[in-house]
Image (tube, rainbow, N blue to C red; front, side, top):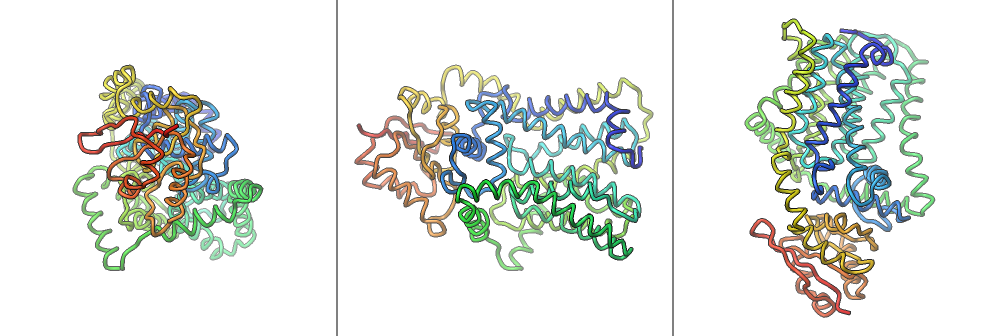
Length: 503
């Protein structure tokens, strides 16, 4: 182990290992994320929503006021950067996602090197992201980018709490400020990850009467937060959108979040705890080992020991207390699989040989590819793309016959990917329909009705089973102003209709 070897020194001394890990990150994402150029398109609705709002930003539109969704603003800017690299494919996002995972894997290795030798740290850095892959869906989720920020902060938390260090470096606190601000502007509830470790640092400094160092760290944290949040706030203020950004991202999400009574929440948390043990046994036991056993056994700072355990439970509650839970929400708490892997590697007593590095690289990469099972679908998907079959290709083929087409998707589903496949930059604020109840946010459906009545959109996608299907299907203006140009039966039970404006 390298105890507390500086990052620069580790990179200089172990650059060959880190280079291999960097290549590993790009290969892992190449095979295991549908952002990859290996796959024709990532048809996940959320990803296409982010990407198209990113393209709207690049075209001069402002999120929330001119491009609606209720997610955090930073995810749109990230996808906007990806769209600058390639606005007709996800290649730019593949590069960004790969670089992000490379950073995460680098910090996983650095964290492991605090406790184990090179070969075992290498194993940890290979295995940890594969465990996370089990919940990454098709790649590129908001939770993935949050997990990268968490792993970076987790390294510095563990580095500090490992021993009973008297003072805390302000430059490390600056990083915590930046990482927590990234999370704040992507998915606000997950910022609980930082609460207890930061509190433990501040309490420790107060107890030791290190008041100067305390003030330096508070200032550094605030500066780190401002580095991320201030440019975003200035952007919205300059576009007269700061109030609307607050109302949608903070107020609307607060109203949208539904948490039951204490007994209902406790029951939900207990049931989901059991389900994790029942169906994700190895992964969840590794996470619990990293969240509970690791701090108790390997953290010397008593406040840090308590803080890391509480941080896990706070994150678990934030993720699983909502009845709207879906599997990829779990990605952020998988960061605790990192110390869990370190614990497991400390029990290995095999003398390594140099050939082990390349062998492990190949075997664990193959495990990762198997984890997502996208590679087995790749031939079918590429064949489908060549034949122009499937909802996305069928509808986009019709749309692309028109000059400068416009599109509205009255749902949050596969129809979102048609924007990307047809390379359409949305021209209206409510170009898709997030799953918001009409009684909570009626403005969206009202405005979409006006688009239809005024014939502002050339093509409209409406899918059976969408939130407002019955309303729009029976809307007189839709049937008066539009005709069904095509339809597609998806998975044998859900029909999508492509409407075209009557000229």
